[in-house]
Length: 166
Image 1 (spheres, one colour):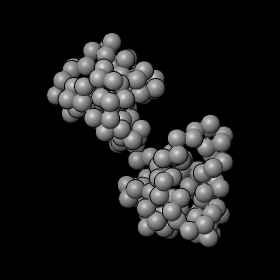
Image 2 (cartoon, helix red, strand yellow):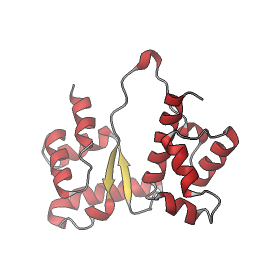
Image 3 (cartoon, one colour):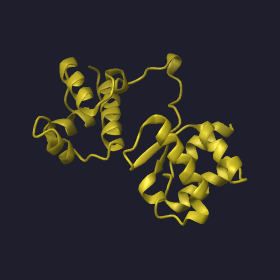
């Protein structure tokens, strides 16, 4: 496995773990010691090669298809995709309802449709952000700034919106 591929694979592993709100030690605890923090960390850094069997087991542990863990190699070395838009639902719950009411209802609807009730984060599409911008009577970039100021969206979301507006 090439060093660059191992680092890309590791980045995918780290992204899935953090998406699930787990620390390296959290993985070890949740797996009851099956996955050692030091081993998972070395996979994530690309310092240690992971076998296909172990990768399949790790995918099963995270509850994702193996292909979600494999680095994509777009033809012609295309630029990396824009970051995902991930709403922090825990922070959203602390934003006053008069400001966040429409977003809270929209997020609840998406959760209901997906059957996704983890209550921590919710990934939304660019189309969702555009719809929310119409609801809030703002441009997607202005709404993004508003959501960042509330702490509901990560500042990386600016790149996703900038990518769309190009």
